[in-house]
Length: 327
Image (cartoon, rainbow, N blue to C red; front, side, top):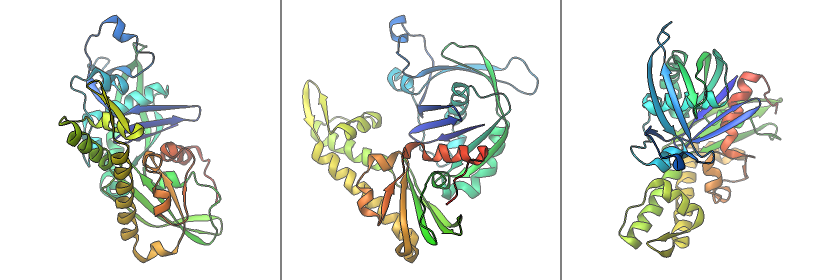
């Protein structure tokens, strides 16, 4: 039993005894000098041989995945498509993550979809993953079969909500899952020790907008473009060395962070309407909850879930292991 949360920024995968975190970036494999291959565990070389029916030999391809794809830099791709499961990277990331978890052939898999896309895409995604069958090798290890006997598709945000504890009794609560491209919100009612859904949705706004603003500030100061992956590092540190000189973007980063957090909060609260006024507690999850700490001041009675980046994956795993917390 495994859970995989394929995010626009990172892929989070979890089993009962291990975790895997991979930047959601893939690049074509190329031969590297031996010195470059000594990468200290940073990123992965993934070989995938897709199988059709009982065929022993299928189409075999190799990729750089994660940090290695970012660093290798030749043809590295990530996607912001709404139908991200249709992008070739999606299945590569799922297979790589499952192999790193050492999932058995025919494993039960739980994955998530943004709330706004859930109804329209869940069956297509389930069928796509249940048909996925390949032999996979990671970092020159042995090829092993990876397939999924059962796939459960769960709404993002709802997964994260399953990790919340000490829920206020007889109250409305709201989980806000701040991602790279989208922010999901799930409204629920706590009553009689049970949590019942009251609605939810997605807004197309996330951490990516902050990185875009930081990249624009860098461009204004230097006249040079800034890759989104570098923008993330600049946003975290506030400064960067460019052409031998340190560039201080602390003020620009803070403004970008505050403005992005405000835009997310405004959109979610507007979508909730009057119901938002009666929410007893907002729970914040996703990598964006850590990247945008100002969100706790913009939602009333807000609390960041422990380990927010992993909240969805951990919640998905609870769905299949039967370890759901009661309210």
